[in-house]
Image (cartoon, rainbow, N blue to C red; front, side):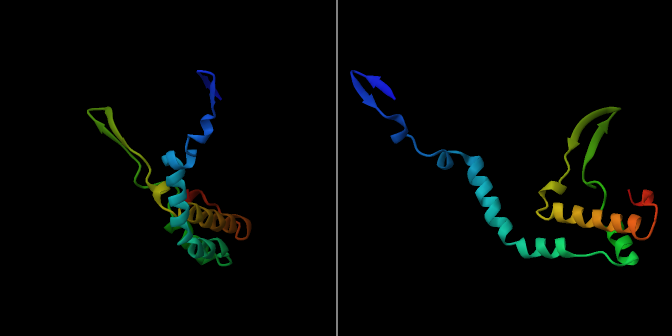
Length: 119
């Protein structure tokens, strides 16, 4: 509350909600709406069970361990620029990483393979 000239003004009545003014909240809501379209694909990827050595090897080789786009640009021995990993921009990134992890776990636990060559 604010007192001016013996009048009390209740400030929250004049302040709009933070959700309307906060662009981060609006971006988050937009991202949630956008991801709803991919929800069936996310669920399908999460439900894939690895029960085959050939499939596990294929997935482990297909999905990279690190983002292939991340680079340091070096000129005359000095780092001039850095290209950040763009994998996080992929809306299915977490599902692909989980699928690769399940494939590697299958190879180690069920097949007894050494996965050093996949890392």
